[in-house]
Length: 124
Image (cartoon, rainbow, N blue to C red; front, side, top):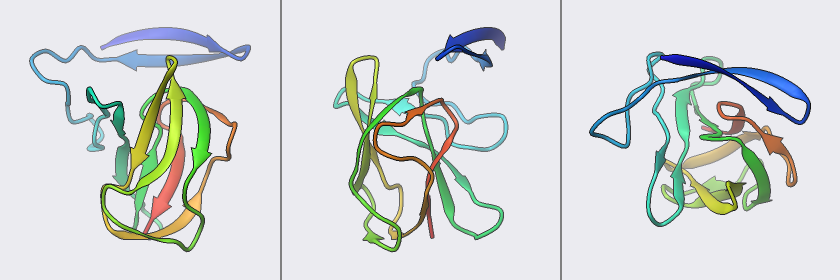
């Protein structure tokens, strides 16, 4: 694990990067799903069980800008439904739902700059 300081919008963030060999996904040490980048530009978000509500928390898989949000609080959603578009490295990445459920909360807005790991949507 290597540590780096990254400056984004005049804020300095300390990040740790783990090299993954032989696979494009790796379970994170805290039990959360790691992000996966596929050729179709669909982004598999980091997902964790929410401790307070029993739902799932969709976290930003990488730093970027929220281009659009396709759902609102209370919407019923299906597995693989597009929830939002995250622009990162000049690519538009679809963030899709890993499960069926309903949107409990949305932690970002259109135009927001996000860093990897920030809570974007909670599904119950």
